[in-house]
Length: 117
Image (cartoon, rainbow, N blue to C red; front, side):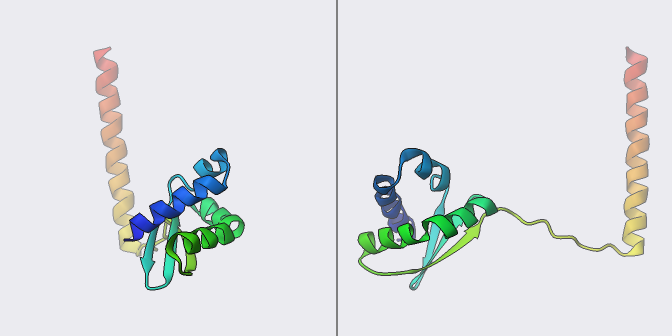
């Protein structure tokens, strides 16, 4: 249901917006609906902010026209956020040793390649 409704909303938006704007901001969006809340997923944080601040009212109207009802609209980004996880002293030491081992292996491989030339 939600993908069908979002497809209809996108079709409605195509008719309201110029082609470059639609393709830039809406082409890679998806949406999920739970109860009376639609969550629009943008491809990145910048697109999410742009849609939320510039197109929320247009999306609201298109949803109302297509479905005959109103929805609360939320915007999210599909970008994955990097989370810093602190290491214990032992984990840091182990990681450092693994890196030294890899560096030695790379050096050995480089020497082999140089000998073959």
